[in-house]
Image 1 (cartoon, rainbow, N blue to C red):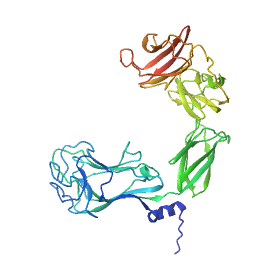
Image 2 (image 1 turned 90 degrees about the vertical axis):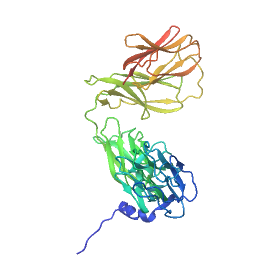
Image 3 (image 1 turned 180 degrees about the horizontal axis):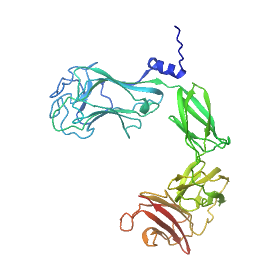
Image 4 (image 1 turned 30 degrees about the horizontal axis):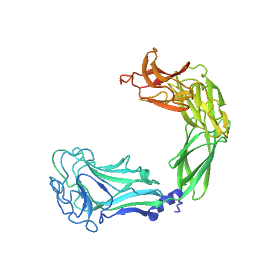
Length: 471
């Protein structure tokens, strides 16, 4: 009987990965290295201490003379064992940062001798960080009592956290513990981080409307190894994508989310895909008649009209520049100030209680100035705040002219009552200013959610805008 076997390139890669695995970093604990130790963690020769319950520490290291472990030399109230009533992860041993940026299929392995009571009472953990210890992800904790009386190898797949990351740390910990029954805790030797050296290719493609094949610009293209945005022709390119089967997801305003799996990326090659997005039939209406005006050389004033009638509740507008959201506003206008030379594409969406609309028709402007003087923009300022809606605080931005005098920035509630004077000044000269409102009144009390107004006044000029505090 003849059997046929069909083996994909991706399968071969996985099959041979163990043969290609390389050591990224290792520690046998014979030389004191830059581990961060707290509580009763030590690097020293084990002495077979502890074991009031379970088994004691080993009397010899697995290799060499030293290990990483808890109370190896009998320094605590229960020599060789961890203490009572420890807090969550109170004893920790944190590795130095490990550079895994050129590796895939990253694995953690070490020789383990561990004794810990069942997790109803005591806990041991292994956590991994890929941002130099700022955040941690738990990869193991004891689910039962553990009583090792010999060295055994432990191996954990940490690829989802550590692959292609440059600041990986490993953390061993003990705690919390209850008020009785002490165990000897962690003993660790010959720790090894290994992986397969990565090879890379690229994914390129076009994003089009499935109903008419029109290109979709400013679509967000996301992968596990990088993101990009489609250009005006719907084209995108993702580089430095690891060899093997990969996937991408695409989101675009007005369209259903799209995912493409099983994209075979080859070494030093580019794989092409065509992404056909289906329009979302349930979107509420978008803003109308977006227009852009350039004034004073490098400032843009956007205006638009409310969407056509809808039964949904309109909350705000999102303003996008070159496909990236830059502001949420409540009015039908926005000022984009102090732009550098270049081509800018804008569109606006409406935000409802049911979600975000499709994009308005886009508009484009070209900023191309060689010299911008300090001519007066206007008697006082341009005014906006971000975020809006906000919680718990927002930043109010305003522009003052050189001759702005006796200016003030004041918050009012929907009844017209003054909530707080944020800023008063006689004359600060030409420039853009920012003031943060923390959602508190003049007495330091946090105000309730709802609509508020912020007014900028100088001389005979004033401008008022509204903002929405959500809780």
